[in-house]
Image 1 (cartoon, one colour):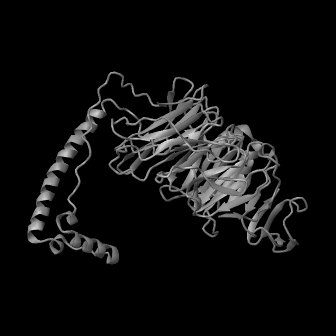
Image 2 (tube, one colour):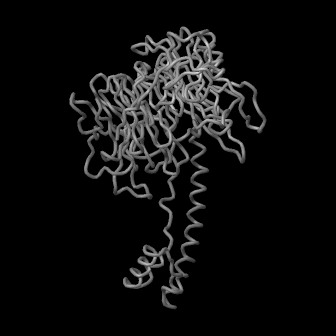
Image 3 (cartoon, one colour):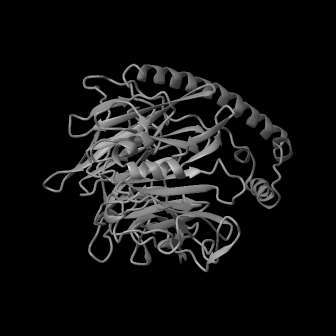
Length: 521
């Protein structure tokens, strides 16, 4: 369901984001993606998805039936892709209407739309089928691309992909998470049968329209004979398999109606119970043998497969399709280490490790190979960093902004610094709260969300920011999804000075509107 939200914009926004001159604050929004030109923003918070026209500040809100894709889910012309349970699965929003993406009759499991091209002509994602089982006879999801026909989208094309994973077994999932602006490159992952490896994969269309795939991480397995996997694990004895159909039906009925599980002694005869116990003895012998074989198999496999522990569904691709980024997360007892890797797909798939003393997760990569990341060192409260294309290390995002736009830096210094708790429980005074950041493809527009760790007196749990690099005056813009900034305006002495907020007539100062402080410069 769509809702048009009433909004108030204090300050001046340009007609298009390329001309926007002022940063903006969005209370209770979690902006996690921008279209590649920065003209549209997407936010998710508490089951509500918001689509923001950055140039006009119009906000569309969708209820919890909607979820966005995990890749670049916004086109430059305002098409939004994701999943909408009201229209049965993968869907797109265009011109005020949600529409389903075509599926085959048996496509029912993990069917998702993940990314869309700049012009909306192609959508990538994955589909699954209801007859897949946990034994993984084949992948539970396969990568697809939908092509626009001008009115909607045609039946999907299934992208070529590996039928076995690096463990020489059927993979759990084969995904397509992000698509380049021109639609000719798609990045995803192949999650191995055991879940140990999330291999980055690239699907690429050649000049003849033919698609191919390749792993981006070098395996160097030519001439190597991988060990044989141990097969599927033995299944444990099910108690109802040892009695007649009538008692089995009664057993299942008791569970369904009252949640009561009859004990094997209550359900089975003495002879059946002895058979059930013997079956369990055999099962424990077989499962022990299986896990010994599996452990030996994994040990042998690790001699050949040296792949970082990339986070599942953590694949970022630049809008031009050149750079792919992923984060490795390593857990060691009570500590967590994060390593960010970037691949140049136009330079022999060369991978580079970006070093950092902070625990950072990659959140965006630009067309030039600049990588944005955020430190999750304090719960959802985060600090943003950037590794520029000519560097191999991260610096705080505010240092980067200071060198590019002094006006934006000053605005950030005023609005994105607060007293907040640190990881060890102490208080950081006037610390930077730059959040989890994304950007337009050329970094001309930044956006971030931050958990409110500095003011428990207000209901907003999150704040989001849209930060144009061509910021001019630094007027504090506030976008509200309700009437909170409408109404009489008071100065700090409690004297009414206007019937409504107006930056063109009110002098510089701090004002109160419905209990909210608004700063006009």
